[in-house]
Amino acid sequence: MKTGLDLNSIGVSQPGLERPSRAGSSSTTAVAPTSVPSDRVDLSEQAQRLSSAGTSVNSDFDLEKVERIKNAIRNGEFKVDAGAIADKLIRQASELLGASTAH
Image 1 (cartoon, rainbow, N blue to C red):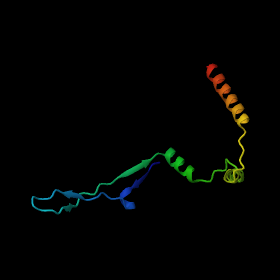
Image 2 (cartoon, rainbow, N blue to C red):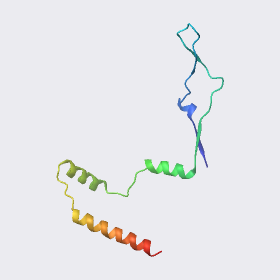
Image 3 (cartoon, rainbow, N blue to C red):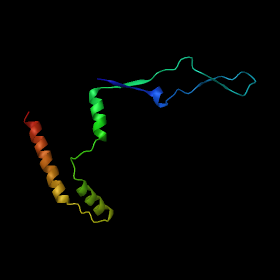
Image 4 (cartoon, rainbow, N blue to C red):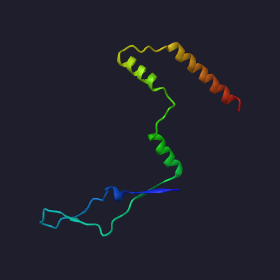
């Protein structure tokens, strides 16, 4: 199923074209287009799902934890454990290298 978006229906319009001024005349005259073009966008079902997923509530993270971390950063109390980060990076790199050499 595809849905279309008619840009003309939401107030998007093409600006009027200006006619070159005549010799000795300093004003320009707007020329109305003879036909109104219709711009249309069709979204695939997958694009529609992705679009609606961005606006839905995501429960994959702990909002309270995020707030605690934000407050700790704001108050200058957030401590980074560089050793733990380094260990996890090395472990992940080893797993990726192991996975790529297994092929």
